Length: 119
Image (cartoon, rainbow, N blue to C red; front, side, top):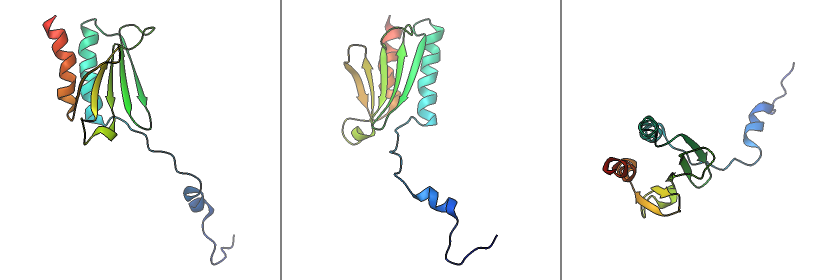
């Protein structure tokens, strides 16, 4: 096979052509570890039974279910657009009410831990 000067590798061109996919918001390893630790404790207590994770363009959502056929009891959301304003982490109840919003995930998740400790 003969290489003609001026020609480039066709596979290199393929990587740069076409639209680039939109970035997706996701939980990093430490955030997901903290959420799954809380989830594991609640499953052991018999409070929660199922979860779902959604990675969307504008936010990441961790939904917690009492039963898999119901609506989520809590949604833990990460929305980077709110990072400089109210904080990018929030816990939302089944009714859609924001229970807590903040800049640190551990402090936001305390609203769930404290409710079950008092009961």
